[in-house]
Image (cartoon, rainbow, N blue to C red; front, side, top):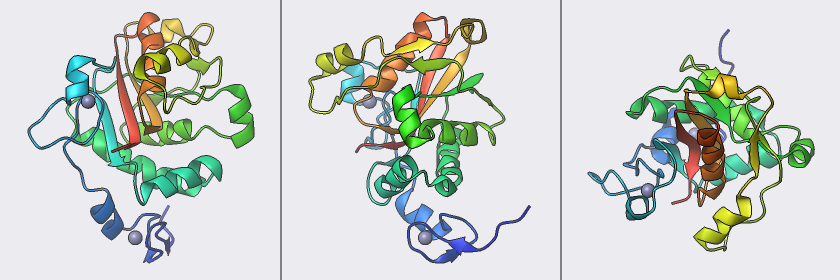
Amino acid sequence: MFDLPSQCAVCRGWSARRLCADCVQRHAAPRPRCTGCAIGVTPGVARCGACITAPLPFEQAVAAVDYDFPWSDLVAALKFNAALDLAGALAALLADAVRAGTAPRPALVLPVPLGAQRLAERGMNQAWELARRVAAPLRLTADAGVLLRRVETPHLAGLPRDERARAIRGAFALTPGASTRLRGQRVALVDDVMTTGATAAEAARTLLASGAQSVQLWVLARTP
Ligand SMILES: [Zn+2]
Ligand SMILES: [Zn+2]
């Protein structure tokens, strides 16, 4: 197995990888992030103000990059054009961010699931494409068969925080028989983008209510 030369997805320069080292250094430099919601913080700050007043149900949150140029374009290509050639390079950024963090390794890595209709439209769940590629180099178990989405997420942006939480309540459930795999386990939930965190928080609450010991959130990109 060897890498064939290809073009960097950002600068179009020839590179053995889909993201060249220069672009990763320029656009994906690690920065201090809130351990509760992964938003960028000033150095030395562990938790942002929002997480101190109203913590999300995550043991820790990890993000590789800000949801900004060029990552917003690449996430859109992955999600809407099924550009799976990008999934490995993006997942590698997330795996690096997880390695750089301090959170204990989970027993299970789960994608935030799509509803059946959206999955049929897209032909794949971008969160799963990332989750399994993050889990592999970390030697963790990825499992797309634990959590399912019963209803599509309504558009949450623009809603106040408590209304967002209400709009998505009950959206997730465990697949039949999955609770035995989940009980007592430390879990990481993987998604492509975190905006408000309402969707991932509801998924985490479902997992915790079903016996998970703790839930981390690993996202490729966090809205700044
Ligand atoms: Zn490049
Ligand atoms: Zn925070």
